[in-house]
Length: 231
Image (cartoon, rainbow, N blue to C red; front, side, top):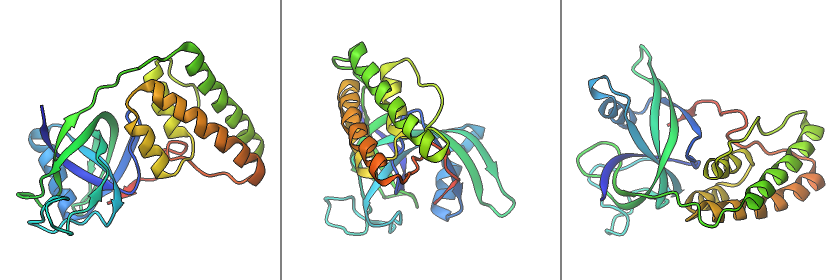
């Protein structure tokens, strides 16, 4: 069943299980926050990566495919961000901490009726596919190789212990490796955990020799848990 949810377009990709701190100051996102926290509850909103354009949404705009160029071009698959903490400021802005939970696919954008973007979405399952112990172990070993090289070059690693569950493992790896947004979006959209782990193995085999050659270190969002993002 499709469900209408608020949308927060960002230039980055939120993955299930990953934290998302935000500083809310624009009026449309103040409105969004007020709506999802009405009645003292900690609600949720969808996060989608921008393909092009900006986060701005002209009131009355028609969804993508409906003939208007005022709606932002967003990816079809996003992640629900569930609020954990909200800290209102005296000036009306807010700092909040959320965490990625369920994946969804955008059925259609619904900009009418609110100052912020909304969408009708369908929720995506998390099938494992033909995940084997060897596949998960291989992905872990590749990250260990990457971490060992990173420790020699920068005196740090991408993080601590990894989860045992294969699905959670796939998302943790996707967050910890410094990847372009397009690669991270592809991992988010993978149909199964098996596909995601196989794709991660390919990406890690690309990143390890690249790191050896360049000796330059990119920073994955999950490595330092990011400074609070600005809307």
